[in-house]
Image (cartoon, rainbow, N blue to C red; front, side):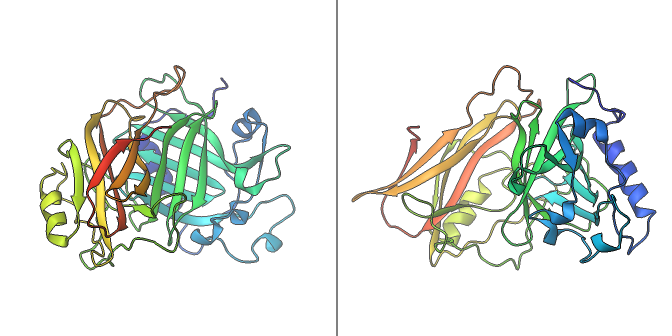
Length: 335
């Protein structure tokens, strides 16, 4: 494993320093690719690319026509754009600047610094990613890692952090734009939708196949949920279920708003997972003549060489489906 030239600073100190440097540039300063770490790119056999050509460039601060005005060999980059995780809030910040990115997660004691590039011999744009290094609990030095970023619904982004072997370290996480410029401590600054948020629909125009269309419930679901199945067909039922969980946050997040005229909420909690690789997800919803079958799956155990952050993770999965009076059955996925 190749060591990076980046000093192994803690996540909070590293990101705070980065934001101070970026802030000193002042508003209106266009980003460039000046922060390229050629050693990390070379370790992956990758070449530097302009992030302003990525599929999510319209979510960043890229200036149209900037590339034509730059000297030969200099890559156009983005002005500083800051995102936070929809569930963790400002305790997990992602800062894009130039052609580089910094991810810092206080609760997971994890950070990543990388440069946008593309592995040699692979011309598919959707394989481009940020190549760099990560620092996680239990590591004596930084290790190679890469961050994949894709556009998500609305103005959001979806990101996955992987180690050098391609194993998932974090994600997928949903990132939303923020004006916050300082990372929050663990347990503070979690994202909360405003009380006037539009009700979440069932997204029936984008059905999952096969089976009944469903969409994961969006919002800050972090906290302690009683281990049980969950079904809410009305706003009152949903309010009662929401009140049963302890968000473990001050102030507590707002309850997600759902269009119960068309949708209902189904899901389950399995208590707590023992590390950052733990998780549960709803994989399918099928309707039979007498029931609505909701399939779920626990994250499989990671390979022995994959590092999982030391933390308790709530095993909660909730989804929106179209209204149905039939009984709801939660069943483990068969494959």
